[in-house]
Length: 354
Image (cartoon, rainbow, N blue to C red):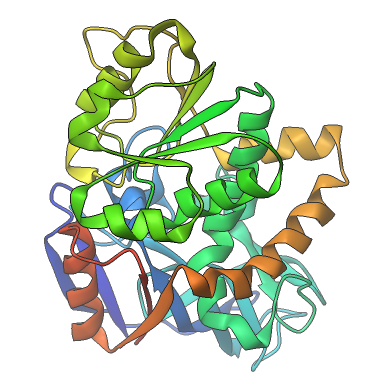
C-alpha cells in the first residue's frame, strides 16, 4: 500500500512509502481513498502539524515524517465492523495514502466515528465518516467541488458568522484569493452590507478583482496605505507576521478585531503576533470545531442554514475555481510541490486519486 510521507521539518521533502498491511481485525474496516483535494488548507495542516493543533497526530508515519490529512471520499474494501458494509462510500478525513484502517463506533445508516485510541482526544468532527447514501450534504453531481470546498466553505461560513458578532462595517481579508477566504467573502457578501477589502499579491490581483466578491483590492506591498471607512475586522489567512504588524499599525484605533484562520504563507509559520507586540487588539485564533459547537448549542437552527448554503455553493464555486485532476503518486507529489511553492493558480482546484 502506497503512502505519501512528508518531512515534518521541511514539508517540501516528500517520498512515496510502501507499507505492508496487516489483516483487518475484528471490529475494524479498511477504506480505499477514491477522490480527495489538495489545497492551501492541507499545507496549513502540515505547517501547523505539531504543537497545539497536532495535525500530524491523526495519521502517524515513520520517524520524522507524517501523513498530511486530506478531505475526500473513500470506499470500504474490507470490513469486520458491524454496520459498515463493503462497497459503502464515506466522506471524511483521510491520510494522504491509498487506504485507511478505522475502528468504527456508533455505526449507523448515516456513518460512524473512528474510535482509534490515538484519535480519541481530537475534535469529533475530524473523526466522523459520513455515508454518501444518507449524507444530506452530498451531491453526486459535484464530487470534485465537495472535496475542494466542503471543509473550506464550512470554515468560511462559521468565520463569517464569527465576524458578524462584532458587526464592523469593514472587513479586511489577507490571502484573498485562497479558497477559504473566497468562501468567507461569499458568505459575508450574502449576509448584508459590509465593505470587503482584499489583500493579495500582484500575481493574483486580477483574479481577486474578477471574482466580484471584494469592494477594494490592495496589494501586500501597499498595505501601509490601507484605509478603512469605519471600524474594521482583520481576517488573516496568510500568516505573515510583518503584514499583520503593518495592518494593525495602519488601521490603528479603527481595528476592533484581528482573527487568525490560516497559514497560506507556510514558510512564515505565524500563528501568533510578532514578538515585539502589536498595535490594537490581540489576534485571536479561530478554531472551527470549538466555535461551531458553541454556536450550535446556542442556536441549533444554524446547522440547517449552513447545510443549505453549502449545497448551493457547490455550483456557485465553479465561477471561481475549476477542478483539475491529478492521478497517481507522481502527479500527487508534483501537485504538493506546486502547492508548497505557491505555484497553483487561484482558479485551479487540485483533486486527486491514487
